Structures are given as structure tokens and as C-alpha cells.
Image (cartoon, rainbow, N blue to C red):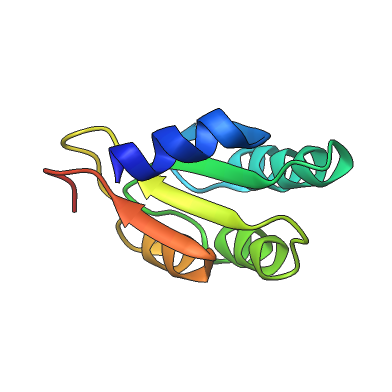
Length: 106
């Protein structure tokens, strides 16, 4: 996966954001805004590095809805080693166009 992402970074306009912590209204606003910015800048891909224990249903639904309606492909990458995408994080990961996990994540 690292090689795949590296090649994409070399040949494309990739927007990358890190999302670490509980899925709550500020996190939803942050990720929705990041996808909006990726679209505004005509990025080829947005990569969300995710590490979350889960969180609020409504916040998760806002993020998932935005991912599903994105004109820019969304890649959720559970990272770094030891990270997790539990509870709401599972739905956020599975809603992405590309779902990937670093070794040692769950």
C-alpha cells in the first residue's frame, strides 16, 4: 500500500488530512471541509489517515454522506501502526472509494 500511495503522490494532486480521535461534530466539520477543499482545488484524490475509537452516529453519518457524494475519490488509510478504525470509523472507512490499512492496525 505504501508503494501505491507513493506512486499516486508522485503523479497526482493529492490532498492529505489526518483524522485522529473521537468522531464528533468538530471532526465531522473538519473532514467535510477537507473534502470540500479537495474538490475546490480539483485534487485527483483525498487521503484521510484515520485513527479513531469511534464516536457519534450523527457525526459519522455527515462524514459518510460527504464521502459518498464526493466528486474526488476518497481513500481512507487506517494508520499509523497501532491505529484503529473502530465503531463509527468502520463506516467511514467502508464509505471511501479506497479503503486501506497499514500493517499492525485494526
